[in-house]
Length: 425
Image (cartoon, rainbow, N blue to C red; front, top):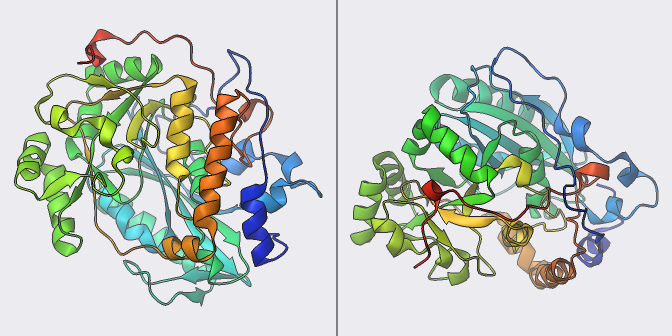
């Protein structure tokens, strides 16, 4: 990364403004690569080849100092046969969290588009032990690539998923700064590498109910979902967490997603799972209306409230780039969901599917975000984004925001189909 210094990087990253005029109605959406039905066709190009803005790396441009400078080191696609009903689970993670991706692969039979991050210091990778956040150390990149390839090979063989992986690096000034995870820039790489019409935006520490991807393999169910998201619906999957934050919690999460809604409802009532973070950040998932979901037999529409950050099934063509100025821990997903709502998507809760958080050690990024002062600065940046949205002149700052790829389309007046909505109570 070409940051002038650690201090100037932290300041410039958050005070720089990358606003512009919103594209006119009917503007071409984020570009698409058509999904391949045969797993034997290997595409050697990567998302940077398709979307990267060359003018943003010219000398003197603010993007060099304000946005993460990522490099795609390696790309491996699944060799499994593709289906027209595939839905891509889109996620991102740091290298030490590969074990979490393995957990998603165990319950998801569709495609997973995952971007895996590694920070570099003096040409060596900053790594920690898997399932740990302790004692980062420097490791040769050849070793990282070898482990990356081994993980893909083993996971593809023993799991259900069709795993499309990208290994993404960034050069940073110190091991300490390596913890400032470029979360939204990584989300953009994973979104860009998804090649299905419907995608599920999900963090790697959440597992989806196993029956969801099985249902999507039924052409009738998939076609209903496709019609819904193409009409402008964002299908919300209620998010739960376990009462236990250790190994017992991991087993509880696994039992819930394998058992389905009836099992999850029983575990809710006996206290083993609960709505995600509603006791710490109520706005995050309160709009889902969990108690209504427990007895819901049909999808129901909900109203967006500021701070809402659900996990959603959505039409890929309606998803704008995420704002890459949000690094570390705070507001990164909230700002993207605010943008989706501002574009006109309507939130509809799935009556049967859900996701459960799998407990894990706290990431180093949380501590570094606080100790650098970024915590408060990210809140200021969020307010700037809100002003841009209210003024109808916001474009997310991204190395992929270029020419006709700056944003998803402006969604026309939405008429939801009856099979996916019911009247609000």
